Length: 424
Image 1 (cartoon, rainbow, N blue to C red):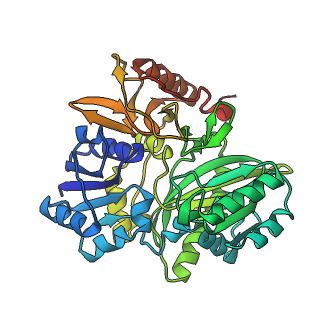
Image 2 (tube, one colour):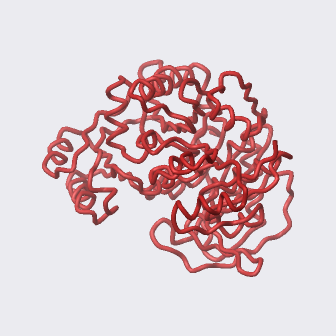
Image 3 (cartoon, one colour):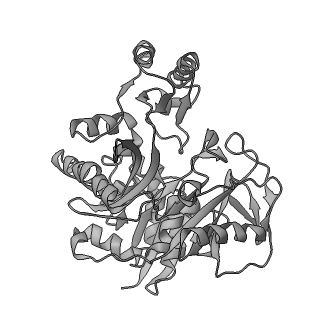
């Protein structure tokens, strides 16, 4: 079968998915909606105003498979609308997508099924929030209930600052409607992992464990961002720990969703906090997302040996258990290059200069870029990612940073310590 594939989204994740798909000779044409200034080098960008127009564009261009990359399309019910129109789409339903679009729903759900997670309260009442905060020790974790493009989590040290933060959330000042209900959690010490399960409602397969770096600055300092880099597989996650994540977090979630007549089909992304309790490492669920992570997707795609389209088809047929999924025996590291204004303000577009580079080291993935007469300009907060791929993590780290010597634009910023936990 030949495929004409549409990828919904506009960031590095969608670009990385496109790069992977183009290695498959069955993929005849790629489309991106809306895409970015670089995705049009991989395929065709499609502009659309609403889902009805999107469906017409899909039908007009004879697109026969859609992969949703960005979470807002799932939260807005686009996957359901496409399915009703008879279009094959790889993404969960809007109802199942509440595992990400509502942190309150997610926390209540996992509590019902005894999935380990931090002690919490979810509320839209300021007095209830303040009372719960006073039962916790510093630091304080405050989350907006709705989608905030990866920026809806604030960790503060001072109780008065925590009160003020909650007030900004609930008033709508911080994140608009998405923040008018909050989840306040007990802070947990440990290290974080990103674990992805591809699910068909009944069965699932786990991808190599990743580690993301959320903070803006070296040493995990500065504000939270959408992610400043990632690597996979993580040596911090051995077989024993992965088995605990599988049996204590992922499996009961899938069973619970099915039990509540809300089966999950697509990518289930578990943000996991690993705590050391005595001699044992124990996983706790921080949050769920319902799509590939960004920047984790950018390091998973180079490691995936089995064609992604075969995995997507197996999910839609409910036959994931029949598919053998293989990975390359390599490591990958992504270093995010952002603008100096990120994550606070939108930048003035800056021309990106490229020098010759050694393609054997890895490749670039483009996100916040504009294309002006064939020239790329840095126009978004996270501009591009340098992806190093090698036989081991140390070499992948070297390759990713070596590639960065080949690009330049005014105000470019990146962390110098991606992968430091594993490499030390």
